[in-house]
Amino acid sequence: MKKVYSRCLILWIGCCVFFLTGCAKHITAMQISDALNHDALYKSYNVQPTDLSLRSKCSAPPSVKIVNIESRTEDYVAFDDPFRKRFINPKEMMDGVSSYLKDGFAASNIKAEDQSTKVLQLKMIDLKSEFGAFGGLYSFFKIELIIPEKNFSKTYEASERSGADYSGTFFRVSANAIHVVTRQIIDDPVIQDYILCR
Image (tube, rainbow, N blue to C red; front, side, top):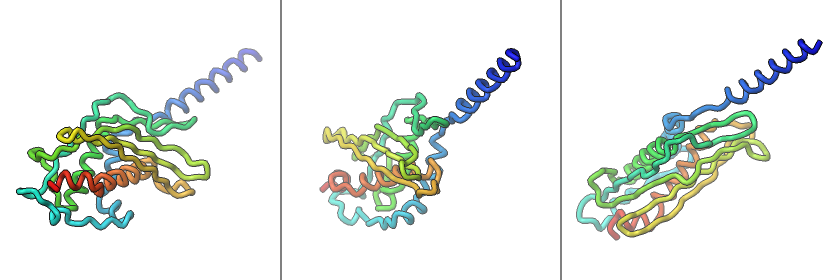
């Protein structure tokens, strides 16, 4: 009897370990970046970009250089509950965010190019998602933006929620929060004045 009990206990522990570790998953930047669909998100949030270049006082067409200065490459827990974990690589994630921000500026007729003297540096502070108390998924995203030329630094953050029926994946809810933050940057009068030489 003790032998059978011991085998059952070992089997049960083994299953628990397999289940809990098997649910840990590394999320690549591509998976969240795929959810950063510019056309779909801009339509979903009813964003109608304005032509910012019309307000420029620069001697040349306005442009911006967006630099990802996030250096962390180790696994970062972006979603955690008792049964599953989701990890991201912060540097890769910010590559995707930088690319999405470039698309957002392009939609407002601000060209993103490496030769621009208007430099925005970005690094991730936090990206976390969790189940809400009343259902649905919540995602929180926060970054720091630095303008070296002006010795200027500012943080931007957003929290977004999926439907109470858990509609929308972890990727989509994270992408929503990222979208809102990028729009905060583009719409910030301080950032606009810097890029537009005002």
